Image 1: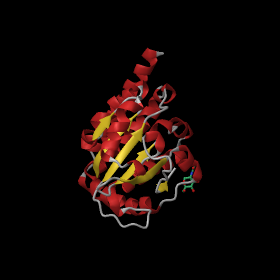
Image 2 (image 1 turned 60 degrees about the vertical axis):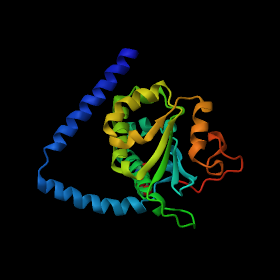
Image 3 (image 1 turned 135 degrees about the vertical axis):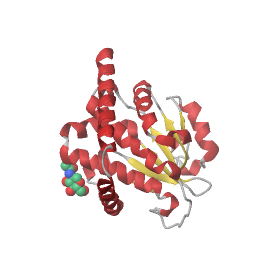
Image 4 (image 1 turned 180 degrees about the horizontal axis):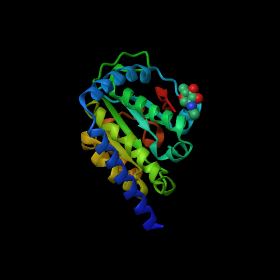
Length: 232
Ligand SMILES: *[C@@H]1O[C@H](CO)[C@@H](O)[C@H](O)[C@H]1NC(C)=O
């Protein structure tokens, strides 16, 4: 089992590297075309309405704001069943990618993207990724690992929009995945503090920067907490 798992991971990485090498040979015309496509995509990503299936299976939310008015995004990545989308392929997989892009778009907007009435102008955001429940079942499929790493790599596109953040509940499976994804996420990971599954270690860290009223109780926040907006 262990050997098979390692083989799967190596397969995933080799194939990712191969695709990147191919993409690097694109000429300038192709690049111009891509810039245009990307501008169009940005508009549709801002307004895209994910189907219920996606918001239910891949939850994240805007929990509140830190003391400098930065929006705090909490992503329950450990619960995201990426494997089922990969196995279905086609539109399901495309929609999952769009969901990732929309998350990055929102984080990238900082306080400019706000679902609340208040008008915050913080230029950047806070990100908490909860890896609780991330399982070997996800890690054991090389195509799933590839898809997740490819989508996570786009964290680097918003690295300057993230002021600070935390990876919490990082278990062994998640740690393995993150070690493969890390080199692809650019400076993003320099801004992230990583913690294991012991709440007593990370709760005080979160509360050093984030007011209790802005976090759910299971992250050390107030019992009467309500999130600003739920996207999943
Ligand atoms: C993908 O998302 C679009 C837009 O929300 C939706 O209409 C479509 O049914 C989704 N496809 C699948 C396979 O979930």
